[in-house]
Image (cartoon, rainbow, N blue to C red; front, top):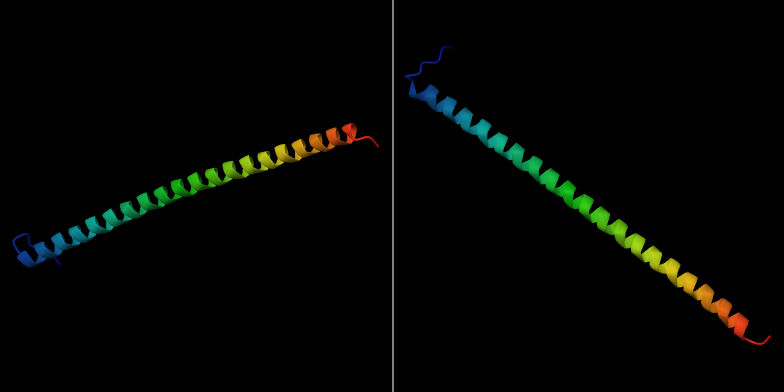
Length: 80
């Protein structure tokens, strides 16, 4: 089938196809941006979770060390 450029029906079909392709490309780019944004947000939350875990575990280590030092000083000062 040969396309006649002077036929309005075939021109409308070509323009509709172009519009559909443009819409699909736009949706694909939008989805890609959302995936990248979601990945960046996920990485940020993972980093935040890791830092909070390290801070809490460091605090627990300090508390346990302080309790051990306090207990050893209590044993030295108490007359047995």
